[in-house]
Length: 455
Image 1 (tube, rainbow, N blue to C red):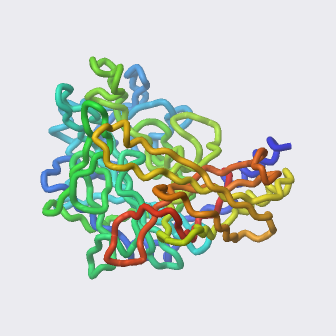
Image 2 (image 1 turned 180 degrees about the vertical axis):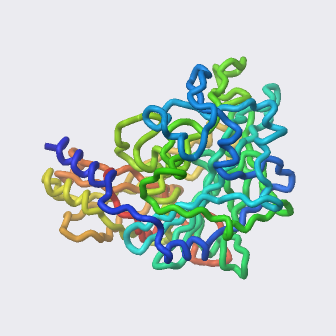
């Protein structure tokens, strides 16, 4: 029974009844909040259009055999399973001083690829994607440069609610970047009407400010992004290439169906590979219309059963809330119709919210002494036919901070038989506009507009 229920819901979610081009209103919204991207003052690897990039690569298999030596936006997805398992390959050594340098937007017209995603509860998320032909790796002592790859897709997103911007999400290296930031705390330009995104030197991840950002802190080395003012400032408003999300694509937009890798296959022959799985050249990324969006990654034919924070159809990197000094947290959230249907058909009468609390580490000289511990606090209510709920679990213990929450449906209040949705990371901010830092809070007030669903 469970299998048939899941299959029908997954089918309805993955094959929506209506797909359409972006509306004039949504295009106007994308232009209204189009960001300015500030490149590092020493940047040499610039963005490009997809057409520019494809003219310099060949589509190959994992052994280097040529599948298509003249790749275009229209034929890139012609190979079996839309190119799953294939690579867009070029001579990296010569390309680094040639076409892989891209198109400097201060001198050459290029494109910013924008997906406009209407969601529930008045939300429209606008995903602004930056494509660059090359990602410059990081220089590591004793190892040299690691992590170069051909093709680089990075993004920042603006969340609007009823046509007004409320948050910006800065994304880098799949799971890093500054994350989700309230609109009031965002660096802006154009009379404080539009956001600024700082683009990391060479690797192009998005950050909220200028500075140095460590995203890997290993025992023997660190990987850091560098952003700055004083370089090329690109107002992308007149460079938008807009797409509706979700949609279907054909003809000259066939490149959006490509399931292969946007770069060379990575090397595995460096001497340090056994302890760090990156050589000088690593495999190129998936494209923007990626597996975590529609459940199809590099040839995988199964539908994903949870939402990655990379996904354009899911919530942003973090769900925002207000730090509270009360003895309880407060979560107002919405259940998707699919969740209601599963709970009803499987006879799960209870709705449970589980809050994760993480210990706040004390400063310590010994790295091992700073490891955190977690605990959970649950609160239960009866599942009704409503789609909006408010649940108030107890606050975390002293020296613990709220870090995530999840929702589930259960058969009993002992929580022995439950069906949980993937958890959502939380980020607390102060109501004081002068305090722009992320807060460690034992309690939080959350109004979550992203419907909870299990698929």
